[in-house]
Image (cartoon, rainbow, N blue to C red; front, top):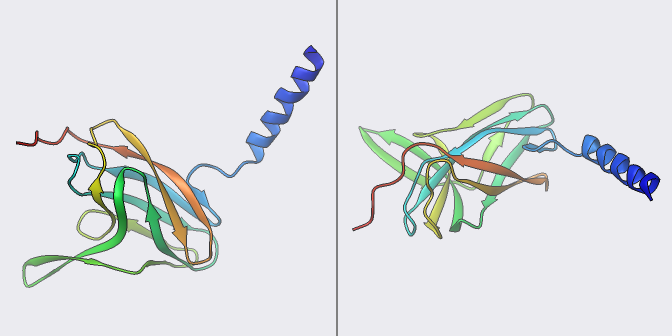
Length: 149
């Protein structure tokens, strides 16, 4: 019996060693996924960096169970007025990178199902035009949101 257990453990180690690293979707690496604290029922945002060591691709969708909906958005400023718009995707050039950050591209979490507190973690699944998709862990950074009155 112990020999069988040893073979099972060795097999699991080999499978783990061959598995795609967390945060890797095809040739695109997803790094430093984070969010700010936000109250349940409100909206939030997710930020991260995409580094592409493969061919050109495009981020076209995101989904998570912490919000009613997730959309790709871009914030821009014109004439001193900030505007946020829904976009259909973000190009990720071959051999290049793109940073989703405050004041720029981000994943908008619409209608949070729960409060996001500093230190919490949740998953988000990203889908690319190539058909590749993967799930990464997002860490909530910062202080807890103010109480709802």
